[in-house]
Image 1 (cartoon, one colour):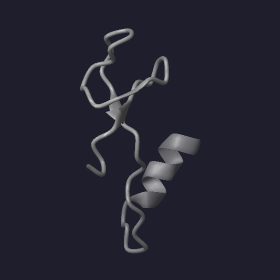
Image 2 (cartoon, rainbow, N blue to C red):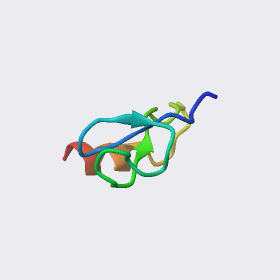
Image 3 (cartoon, helix red, strand yellow):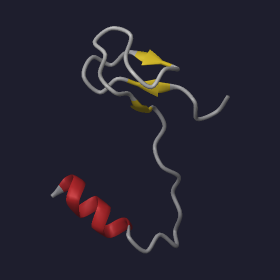
Image 4 (spheres, one colour):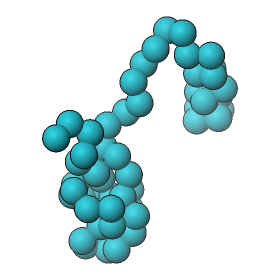
Length: 51
């Protein structure tokens, strides 16, 4: 069951559905992406996210 729990970005509700039962928006996975030291594009993702 690992990686199946999802979280609503607007109200923070945890669910197993692809849409939030409270507000109806699309949910996202609740787990961060795996870290890899060989990640070639990590610096670009961090630059977009943190400025």
